[in-house]
Image (cartoon, rainbow, N blue to C red; front, side, top):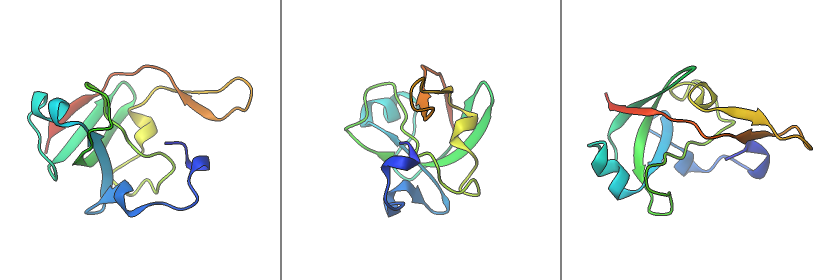
Length: 104
């Protein structure tokens, strides 16, 4: 979620001092994690730690991470995402990216 769309950081964007990684129940089951589990997401440029939040509005096979929050919340989500500047506004936009999910 780009920070410019937020008026304030909602409490559900982090839990237990870590980012909230939102997955639907089917994806969570596929990667063997449950609500509240701590996970490490890894991408081509780095890793970030997060807490699993089950959210059925997230598409199968996807993980939703908030952007623009303090990097002390488990790391920088841009380290695991492929973000490119949108051509007109220059705002970060996402390209497809794969992340690994591992319970910690």
